[in-house]
Amino acid sequence: MEARHDEAARRKVFDLVKDIEVAQMVTLDRNGRLHSRPMVAKQDSSAGELWFFTSAASGKLRELDANREVLLTYSDPSRQNYVSIEGDGEVVHDARKTQDLWSEPMRVWFPKGPSDPDIALVRVQMREATYWDAPSSAFLMAYGYAKAITTGERPHPGDVGHVDIR
Image (cartoon, rainbow, N blue to C red; front, top):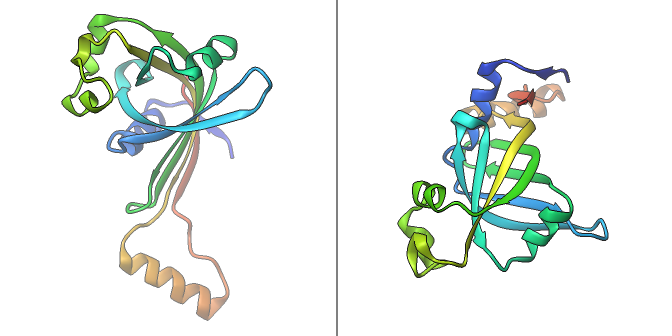
């Protein structure tokens, strides 16, 4: 699959993830082991950045200091949309950005609000993404099933793309 570099492809990636509230963030520890955890996602499509709130004491911050490589996965099974994003993560302490990204449900993790000293942000600068955008209606799924049963062929899987974000 050839990577696309156009603005429409970049926009498609953001459109697919913009309403998905939780992404799985994968980082590497100093021994090269993968660590995955769910993170509440905050998008900033204008800059090709994805943002996440975390505790300033979190172990993932040490992992990012040692190795900035991050893999994010987004999943919306109800729409049959799936996206994986590779990027460079960094820890950011910025009161203005924290305030800009703040939403009241974040208070569950940060009871003192956006000025909570325990807040750190993780900014992921996207490098590339792969997406799977499959037909999601019950009719199309039933059609695909019927086609597989009657012809032995797979239905068209939908739109699959690889996007170079840089």
